[in-house]
Image 1 (tube, rainbow, N blue to C red):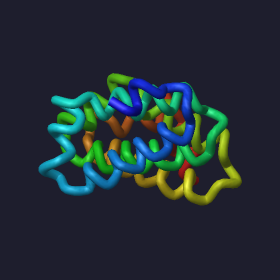
Image 2: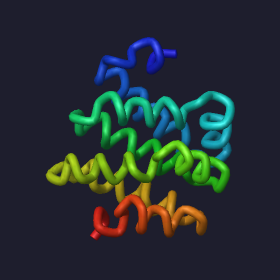
Image 3: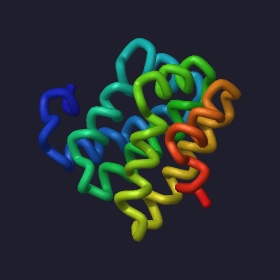
Length: 131
């Protein structure tokens, strides 16, 4: 509820994404967080609303990394534009090591699902963002 009620507050979004990252660390939590509670959509909204905040982008990429740990979540995240948003964050915050680390982790997990790998590289430039 906090992320939804305070969409314009970067600190709420940063900490919300960090909380989702921690909660989704356990595989058994990742699916319900995304599929029942909309954590995936909340994270991606935060990425769109706070593109200039390296902290929001870093923790959002970390949340995507953990949420994408199962095939259903990974496919849903890609359908919602997560690949493009992660690459955008990495491009916008090239000097921020945490954005780069968590962005690489998010791409790694998203690309682990075969159907995501080609679009990540061919449409979103994830290969260039990583290299």
